Length: 244
Image 1 (cartoon, one colour):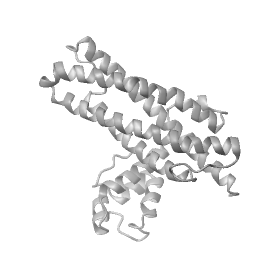
Image 2: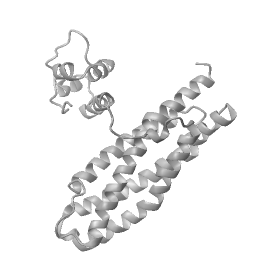
Image 3: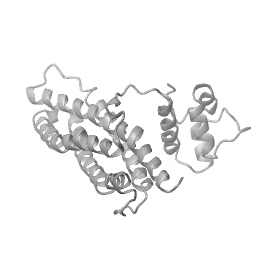
Image 4: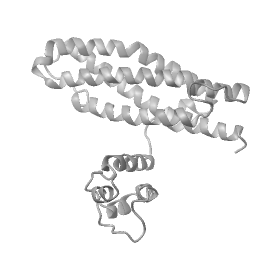
């Protein structure tokens, strides 16, 4: 896998990833015949584009090329409504039960160890923000996309929700949420050294890291189920309803 940065050159994309090159060309800031030795930074500033935005686009394209090792075979053969029910029971219920528990554990660990490890305060702030964001994300799904999916399968139509009657709207928002939460999970792993338990860790500290590790795993699978099964399935179902 190519390690992307603002100094990555177009020629490296050509050598390593047809998907990333295609994604770059779809933006219009690089065309056939342009200088392949140009860096991402040079291309972006020439068009007044923040390089971080293009790097995110390229990272998504590269990720789509990498075969996933995440097992979501339990969804095989399920209807979209059953997929929704699986997500609600395996992930939403888990999060609502577990997030407050982890938050309390983090607060206790910070109270005891925070003065000797500044990263714990950063961890506390990050997780607090994640709790708010994930609850908002779940409510958005439960009040918009999930009812739409059930309507399509049960009634052959969609009753308008707070997001209207097209599944593409909420899906676009949720995909953005997924990108953000995966970045936040990466930051969690960085702050905890991949949930490694320090030799001097007390029982509460160990429990916090164990719970964070399980939360990371559950969330990655949650995101994968939606990105790879629910979202494309919902878009396909609505196209079929509309005769597309």
